[in-house]
Image (tube, rainbow, N blue to C red; front, side, top):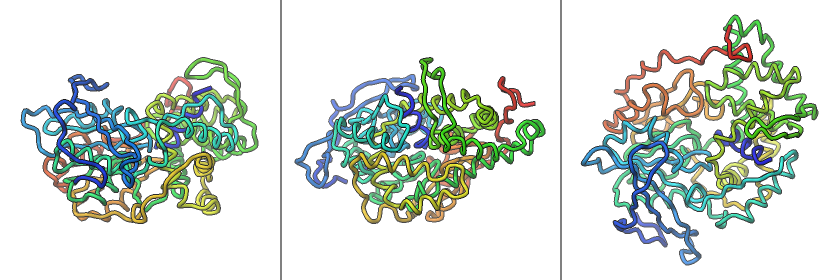
Length: 481
């Protein structure tokens, strides 16, 4: 079954001057080709750039990067474009056409938008890692990772954050732009921070959405972030008469469900909710965690969580399996090889097993997130980051920091931490919203105003005051009463 690995990835992940060795020259006119981008009606431009695979040894080979430039609507665009760093890690910015339409269209009025597939994703030597096996134990994760590494189109040791930002700087120089406005979502906020650290003179402004500060350990914080999101659902349920009556013990039921998973008592045999094929497997604890945590990412999907948990505890796993495997559509844009390279190099080494266990205490997720990725990393080759890459970031650049108050992986506390290093920054927390907020309500116009004027204090956020989580469902047909 080829859905289980990608579904897990979606939940775990749901969550660039001339360079040494690279000749930065203005883009040749024939390198920009007309093309089309899903989600954008108008024709756009595509370009490819050969850059060193290993910048320390330029003669060791190259990797071809793919960039999509969505031209500004203005006849005379601003000279500083809007560069998008995708999240994951492992998503391709070239798949963000719909986000350009729903979130960045106002910015595009005056500015080009650059979507760069970072190395290891999309059309920049993407490393997918699709597999057919069900990883029912940790050793399966190791074997699947090793199989993917051995079949990768490039040496995965060179898929690093450092190389990603060097690539981005190379592309900027070849396209002839002097400065950039940067946007990063989720793990893309790390890319923004590192680019700013390496090339501050090239950055006009930054927008970071669902921020993971470079000095914050993902695996140390993720268990309590998930627990916080679960508790917010419990609070909303308790405050609603129908939900409180239908699910009076929601958090205890989550604990009971996790206990069943750890005891090997969650056996599923039935149709794959995505393909309709018959599947059969034991739902391990890590996957049970992901079935819930993955649903926390979007506020709308959280409305079914108490019902899903209640059904699962009573023996009906169908809604829970649908929650887990339904993430496949999201994970189609994930390039798991890049996810491994970055997490195995930047995140796993930051935490010992004992520290991971301690970080998971008191959370239904425990240390499952860390354990599964550590097992995969045992079959992978990765490169450690530079010594300063994971230290606090600061700067005078205008910074707009965005958080959803229901975010299960990068909660608002991380935005507070990040913005502390930016005296010209502002942190906006959007109510009733999960992971990533750039497309929510009036945020597209606020981002455009910020990029145009660089004045965070002038942004009127009263347009978010009406937002709340939708009522929690108490019945299978979605009824809330």
